[in-house]
Length: 454
Image (spheres, helix red, strand yellow):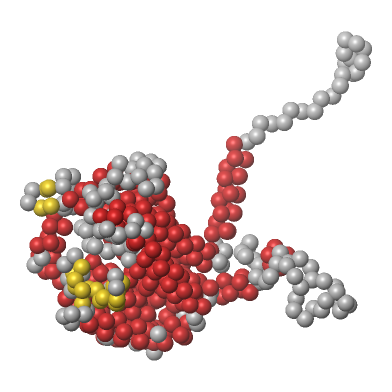
């Protein structure tokens, strides 16, 4: 055995550890992705996304309504918080509707379909009676309730079409009638055209576009063949072109696409261009809440149709992307609810509500960005307007009820018990029974859940 210089035997040293392979970092990323995917696939994910996303959109919308409407209220010799207080009242009432809708059973939702449709048609016809209907910005689609309060019945027509159309298609599917194109179209399409006619008499093409999107969404979910779907789409497109060609206002809005100057030839594109100015001046993080310049009389309808532009100016790109992410999460959750249910009514109603909210958000934001013509539709849950907020919050309550009604979600909610205290009937300290153990979600669900779902 070789010896060292000191005469002692050499000390055996442990071999050096090999360098950590690059795969270790990739494995950590993969593990993180797997955990996120498992969390995303949990039964209550859709429920949390719908409830949390709609809550955040509504709260942020209240903040932006207060910020964007102050100057408009002062110019009208009103208190600065005038529009905010009205929107807050509508949000409180809408929260009650949301809670009621989220607790209703599916049978009650189906039972409400015909009364809501009848009420919406009656109110939409009442709008056209002189002395009852009120004209706002050239469109006669409002009814004065009393004082400064007005309602727009066409907003409730969206909810009526969703519920009634879903109930109609579900009953026909149960009877195996949707394989025949006559049963798929009648009476769904004639009833939808009746609602569209009542809306277009008042001149509100923006709401008519949303109703048309809901109709197409219901037909697509019902499995309409391509020829039938293309035929209805072609008829709607021809009617839309005729309505645009016969209206100078709609033609002017169409010509403002891509405009960069307020006066683009003979067409006044003031609102469209100043919406772009507001977004462009916001930068990454915005000029600060309440510091918008465009809302000082430069941007018309800053707290209604163009509130997204004020959001971009005050909160910047970060704020607008946050709003887009919330709507994307809400849309994904609605599609997930519609895709995972076995109840035909739930599938059609969830798909109809998701189409409604998503299409309206796309049309509003696209108009603010200059990608679509200005249609005059509010941003759902975000813009000022109680008539738009109330039925939308009721529709969100529908999605919450459907998300809670999934079998896996029901099982997960059933495992939720009070975390503290004892079971009822367990007796007090002198009953001789041992006190109840502290409840935790992990302890109760560890034996029951599979694949990490909660």
